Image (cartoon, rainbow, N blue to C red; front, side, top):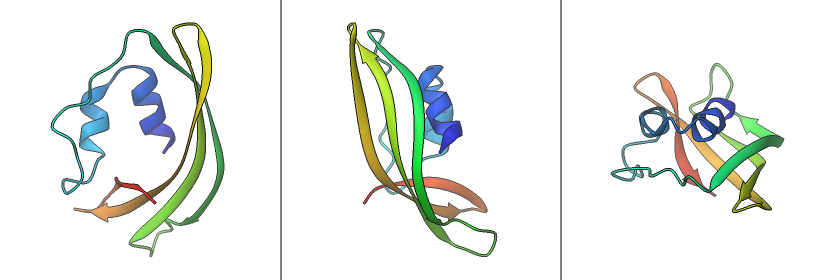
Length: 91
């Protein structure tokens, strides 16, 4: 989760796409030059351990868009795919 937030903040769309499950991955992720991700607050998680096949992360991602602060809140599902954790989508 944190690495994906950092990838969004640094406009590393290649990493964002690589860590997205193929069944839900969009063809592209376009950055927005007026949007700046500023802080990630992980509220909780469930699963995602060494022996788990899936897990969830609840978070708030703070941003500034056109000078206005905002917050994106989501509970996300992550699954193992080809031995790696990937983002499946929101719950």
